[in-house]
Length: 304
Image (cartoon, rainbow, N blue to C red; front, side):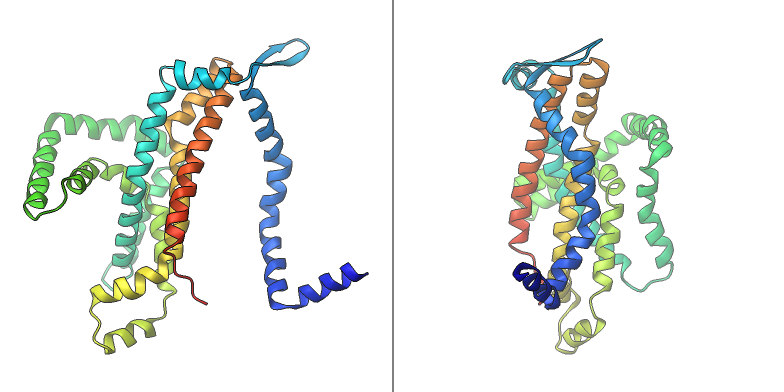
């Protein structure tokens, strides 16, 4: 009775109501995780330490310790290379996607003719990246673009990057930053294609900022540049963290490492090695996600 009375009293408070509705909202994910994801997750972990064989009596597992992990990391010729390339792509692409998304969302929030059409155009990559269209895109459009670049556009792009690097080096920009930015020119297609959802999230966040805040800042003499750094960026900083997590998870799902894991498991029927690869990749991504989220969360501004 004391516990029931204490729980009822807790639910009547504001904090108790927040906790209750928070639990209600996450309960579908929690139930799905327990009933549909937890068992396969633990089975995958068990397989990663086992030799898995299928026979007429069912699946037989033999404990082999860290052999699958050693083979994945030290023996398999493709896993190491693709893992390093995927992690580097995530480290390079995620900041570019976040900066580009925020920049475009700020522009799309301005009042100009054809704003609705412009918003639709920037969301098109999300539609193009779904279902059958992504296969058509991968097989035809990208190949055509790459071929065209190789024949005629490659030289102009190289000259453009060289000119950009020369200007920035002349302005005293750090060579590492120059190399990062010029390298991002070659990734512009991927950055635009993967930025649709992030633009929408940033745009929704910017539109929740009260216009009276900007009016007050303008009355005090703040420029647009100052308004962005002092108002817009702090107010959307929680969404930077949201987009960071989303972008890393999205990159995780699209990585060629995922294809290699599927091929090893379901084409070569080496489920032990496939599970070990999956866990190594999972831990790598979680480390990146944890470190980056910890750093960004230190700078996030929350309204009381």
